[in-house]
Length: 352
Image 1 (tube, rainbow, N blue to C red):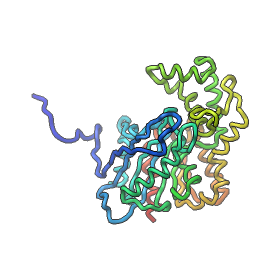
Image 2 (image 1 turned 180 degrees about the vertical axis):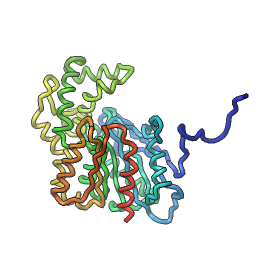
Image 3 (image 1 turned 90 degrees about the vertical axis):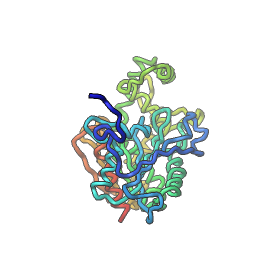
Image 4 (image 1 turned 120 degrees about the vertical axis):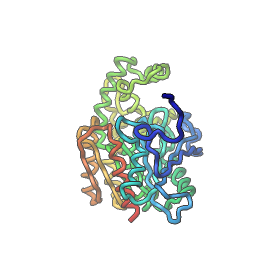
């Protein structure tokens, strides 16, 4: 019996055709021009429209911006785990089968060559918060049938993206009026400090206690061992976002001594100032203005970000901010099935 070529999709499990539309755009940023790392100014931007929503849709819709965790780049959303739909297919099912109010879902890339931006403006990486708020959002509102109103606009993310989802609305409340954070970086003394000592050991044993040696060998390597090298590069990347060195664009002030792991107190205090748990009280009015705050985390999160979510929720409780916190059986990974529920929470609140 002869094999023959046929037209159309192979279907599940390889591909589940979308009922809605995913526009895969490429945009050029002026704000990212001249960024200290020389990272691309040309970026992908993915826009999902529910079934039946065309560019000339007769009424403006809410928008939900989805941002990625550390090391995330936009094409990774299409990755498929065994026996599961990918993120785009999950979002499509949400708007196709689940009765969710129509909303435009935006997938934004803020990758840097250090692996992430924490969605902050920094002389260590570039103005990624301004890129999101002052370039991407206006572009979307001009190009798609979205309501150009912060009370109709939400943001969601996981891990470093969950951090961004918490802090961007506090810092730019005129842009976003609702947030959802999956295991977002918070309670830094619990979630971050253990990684400093681990990084100091790795740098001592394998890289002559030097980040310069670390990056030289990383550039020459033909494989990135995330399990071994993830901690040192992640904290360097965070330092480039939280405490950039004012005298050396693109370089950070580290919160720990690479030889011993001991905290550098003045730098560490600046990190703590950017901890959502400590920011909450300073931004009580902005948080009270949110139409929806949804938090979740796995109870076995390897970075103890479930405790971070609880600590942030406790701060919200203390300043009388309505919110929802859900802890579930799970770790830091394997959470993509949680994303549609959070998007739904935001879409419902932003449609009211």
